[in-house]
Image 1 (cartoon, rainbow, N blue to C red):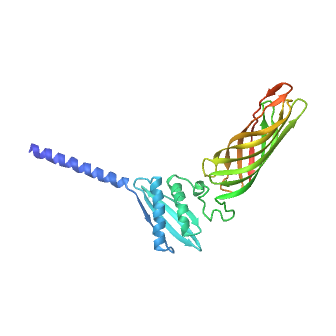
Image 2 (cartoon, rainbow, N blue to C red):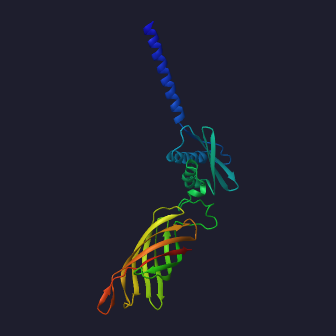
Image 3 (spheres, helix red, strand yellow):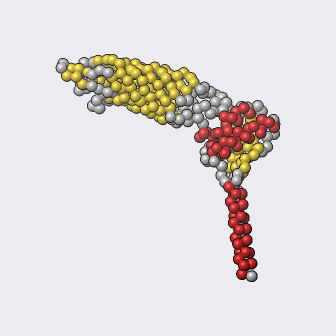
Amino acid sequence: MKYARLGLALFGAMGSFFSMTAHAQEVATWRCELADHEGIDDGDARTAAKLVCAEVQRGGPAPGGVYQVGLGKLGTAVILTLEADVRGAHDQRQMKLSGIEEVATAAPRIADALLHGKSVDQTERLGGLTNEETKNAKRKQGSMHFALGLFGVSPNMKGIAPGVDFTLHYETADFSVGVGARFAGKTNDSYKMMYDALNIGGRYYLTSTDVSPFLGGGIAWTWLTADGFESNNGIGAYAELGVELLRTHSAHLAAIARIDVPSYSLERRSTASYYAPASSGMAFTF
């Protein structure tokens, strides 16, 4: 009897263990499947669902979650819907596409939005916009832009001279290259400063999102006068950093800090002094 009771106890413990394991596996599993797709070809709908479900898996689905990919027609447009039911909590995101082919572009965004509690608009990035989102002003992968800026510059931290900045550049999602001209000056009874520059250079954008920090640099020919020294000019280099806003729009705004490193010094009689003009400002690109 003693051994029989011991056997029953072990059998019961094993049963409880396997039951708990099965329950844990059931909770840990998740599903992603094609839902209603009226008006969409079955083959296209299955491919679209696979693309969206792959992005859901990549983004980290909730344990036990059920995800459904829905497709519908509205005139010539396609409505893509991703719904989630996680332990009774329901949520969904929806995107309007110009065609079924755009599911490849929309899939990473709609999955990111649903899994991480974002709106679809918050997932906008260059290279990931749909035709519906860019219908009024489509932003290409690369395009020419003109920028107008205002800045303040100081060669020696004693005074700040206001200036204007003109730039013509070619911009993509990751970088931009262009040419520019800058003019600044200040004159009063106690201080005179002049700074002009012609430059060619580029920027590298750290992200392709609507707001992106950037690093840049290039070469510049500068003209400089300060502190009563004779004016001088010559070639040099410059470096800049900043943040660009509204990058997914045709017109955008940037905040910029820059330092120029000329190859020359300024002289007065037998005295020479080196200046590296530092500037900061805003630029509007259109």
